[in-house]
Length: 158
Image 1 (spheres, rainbow, N blue to C red):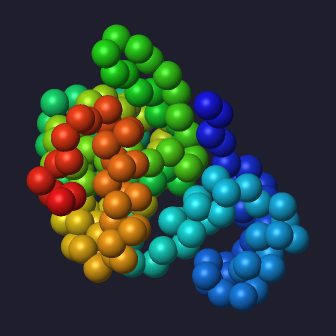
Image 2 (cartoon, rainbow, N blue to C red):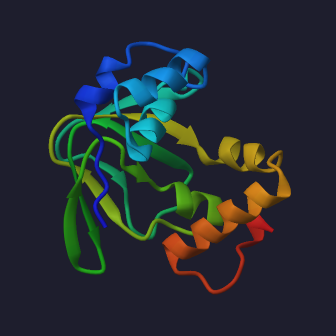
């Protein structure tokens, strides 16, 4: 599976409110993929704090609690999980599934370059999920379980 964000197309969007009619038209006009749209919506969210990480700094450490999740805006990270290493960049979301499931990180994510990210406090994400339509909560629960390869529904998502 290949996940990538076309930063040039996203930048061409400017500073539109991500759910406005103007943005919806611009998504089509600029040919944004679903990954590009999701990235634009996440980085346009003004209620999220931003953080910067210098090369060598860990954003997530395998086995540690996942109290914050990160949406990578710029930069490159190396992920290590179960002896496998790979690199991710803008658009990657780190720690959200683990945080929502109430389980420790299953990977260590280390900044390779200077990384900027939007920070999602897990307690706020869980609070927001509680107000979702039951069908959307179910989709979220199943997605988290699939990402983390869980067989049982986490208590936090029941």
